[in-house]
Image 1 (cartoon, rainbow, N blue to C red):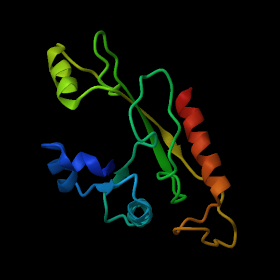
Image 2 (image 1 turned 180 degrees about the vertical axis):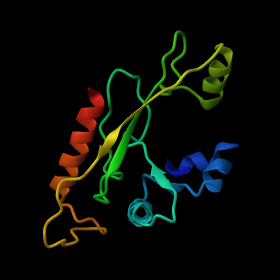
Image 3 (image 1 turned 90 degrees about the vertical axis):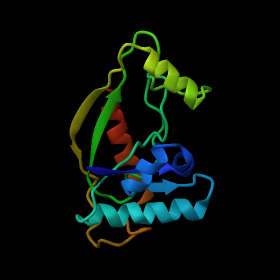
Image 4 (image 1 turned 45 degrees about the vertical axis):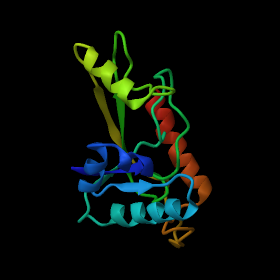
Length: 164
């Protein structure tokens, strides 16, 4: 089991919103700095507390057209803890369910059920560990022991390996 990080707007969707609340997802308002800061600190505290389920995050923050990876957001990497990357691919013949730009949700749902079947290929990669923490374990920001440069390098290493 796991808990997701989702954009706040998803809570308004029928069924999806119920699932978000039932699984104790973290909902973030991308336009509200206070919301982003709260979710960032909650991610760190939940990631360190084994009483909580694993946090499932999508570092791209959205879906793309499948031709390459989008730029990652730092949220999954800021706690400075190990991450396990997972690739989701949607092989398709007619309608690519992963690419939603410019299409309404009802139209996406209609096109998904109009196909005979929809597939997802899940590829789990080995866990990644952050760069070595400074020996003095000085907290840099928001409970993270990594500098911004170390977080960026960690994030880039994971992204480059996923792109292979």
